[in-house]
Amino acid sequence: MSVSKVIVTAVADGSVEPGQMLSIPFNVMTEGSGGPCSINARNDREFPMTFPMNVPLTTGHYANGTLTITPPKDTPSGTDVTLTIMAKTSAAADSNYAVLRLSVVSKITDFVRPTCKVDRVAADDCPTNVSLCASFRWNLSANVTDGNGTGIDRITLRQGNGVLSHDALTNLDIEASYNASCCSQIVEIVAVDKVGNVGTCFHSIAPPVGPTPTVPSGGPPPLGPARPLWVLCLLLAAWMARS
Image (tube, rainbow, N blue to C red; front, top):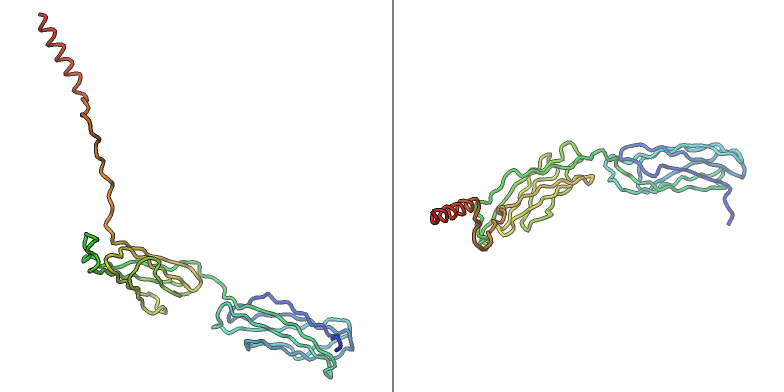
């Protein structure tokens, strides 16, 4: 098996945005006879590409070309693509290729977290005596939105043992509903947008805990400011007895 005298080199940025065209320069050189060299290229995702069909070769000198590849706009971020550029000299006497690996990565412009706002709580049926909570339930509704961001990807519970439901995530304003036993007194709803920003809302139906009252210690009360008056009375009584 003979070693190819054709050399193919290419350098790419390593990533490309969905819907954006990426230009990839490549070079072809031969240490054998010069002449026309046919170019072919393919990728394993069948993304649209353009490239020159052939380049002229001169022995020992590089010929330059440019390939473009454009992932469709709906390509999921994180998609990997393998690109192969092949060069073949005239009469198919010699050939070689270069392989590139690219990742489709969406440009992140959304740095604002989703908003989650509790707009209604119905917990009047919950007894103040927690030992009686098992037979009663409470519910809550919250509004979740990502504004002008990338949109809500998921809504989950971080705290709470109740049932969470919500409208379609494609809605601009999403209504989330939570229903739980009165024994489960707190809930925290988590909303995550499509680029990972996180927003939360928290609510508790537990009664507020006030400060612990101070209990005075035992023992006789202090005499306070009345003590000098008693002393004065005793001195006065002793003076009158001498008189």
